Image 1 (cartoon, rainbow, N blue to C red):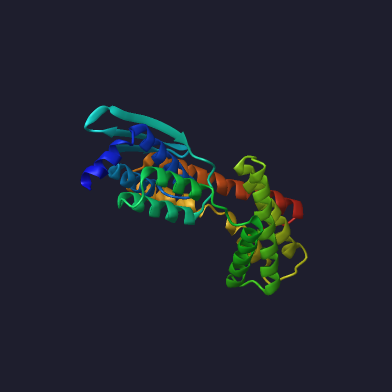
Image 2 (cartoon, rainbow, N blue to C red):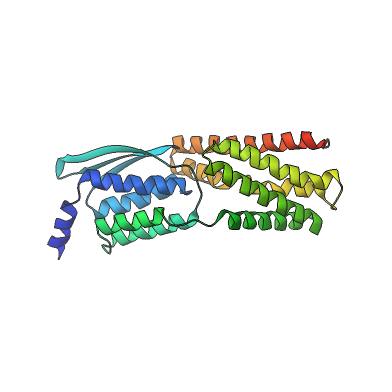
Length: 265
């Protein structure tokens, strides 16, 4: 049985292993995984297939080197650009499960390729459902911060509209920083009516909580984890990316506040 397993592993070439690892790795990064998690998942698969691996993550992609100690010619170094960031934590769990199936010998290479492709092509939640959930969460946060039902309703409307607008902007493949500016501006325009017309008891809470869905929590957390684990270049890049998003949110809010004539900020 062990001989059959060794033969199956020898049929897989270094370039095939590298392509599979890169495909899984960049998709993990784009879905919100920190560098250490990407490394552990990829190394788990490479070890099972009998290869050593070096790994160099950047914010825009991954470079890997895969080689066989027993055959110096069976080695390859490849780089692959990551797709646009779109946090999806279920994807991280699914690829992690796939890596354990491979490590435990429950899935061969061809079957693993099919499963990975199925994970990548799995349908996401519809944008209206995401916008609804975003609106509800911001409305609840407004209530917890001391806002009235009217404040919460305006925070809900602003966040839901901004989230939907950002979805359509990204669907048109515009720059994602522009999507943050426009989403922030739309959300603030709607939430700012609470202040302009004195509709609720705590209009400042409406403004403060309605844009919280745009805060880049995952990049900020991942930048800290990467820093602690020694992936300094990836950590700095994620930090700058998060800081840029926060700046875009501020720009959008400032434009709308000026347009509405709110002067106590």
